[in-house]
Image (cartoon, rainbow, N blue to C red):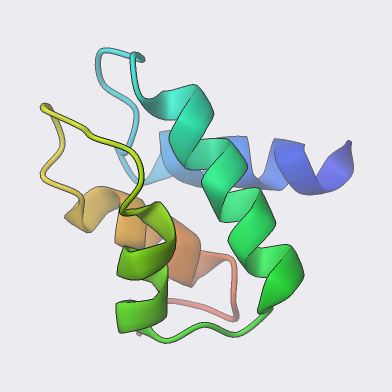
Length: 74
């Protein structure tokens, strides 16, 4: 799936993958979020990822990765 590969690459490029424990859930949540809303706000991104817990990244790297997929960094 090319869409999934783009999301995975964005997570790696933005340092949003550390231990790897939460990565599958975060990546799938991102995929679902972007299919539902191709241009989410930061608040919508945070809400879309909120069902997954991460103890490594602090979430900002993940938000940055998702924002990079919707037309560039904000």
